[in-house]
Amino acid sequence: MNYLGNKEILNNYKVGFLCSRKVPANIILKTYDWAVEQRDKDVCIVSGFHSKIEKDVFDILIKGTQPIILVLARGMMKRFDKRLTELLYSGRLLIISPFDEKVKRPTTKTAQNRNELIAKLSDKIYIAHAEKNGSLEKIEIKYFEKVIKN
Image 1 (tube, rainbow, N blue to C red):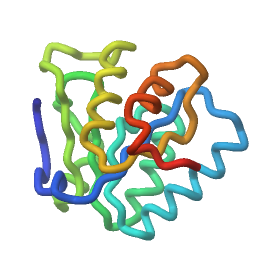
Image 2: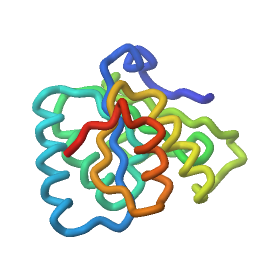
Image 3: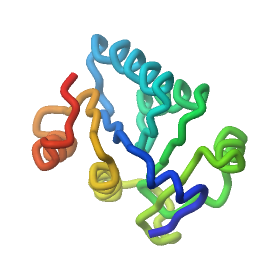
């Protein structure tokens, strides 16, 4: 396991955020409202922030002050955009990669492993949308006691 950033963030109460890539329109606004609520409550969110909606949620969260955990579906990044750099320096961000540096790109398998790690790390899990018979539905079943119903 590779860590970059503030490992103390792991001591916080954490809510995992997962969402399938394909999201029905009626779920999108509800998810944005949920993200604003979590930001305003200062809740630490754990996610891969990889899909479009996950990136949008990240954009909402960084406007707050709560800590954030980014779990990668690839090896540790070597370069960071300005927003990630600022979050790292402010102590609000922890980046975790369960993969070797040689894993340069996310795959279906590494994304599944990342999502499993997010579920394990989190005290509760918010799944905005899980495709029928998809990998997130399996996580929803496996970790049903942690899942927040929406």
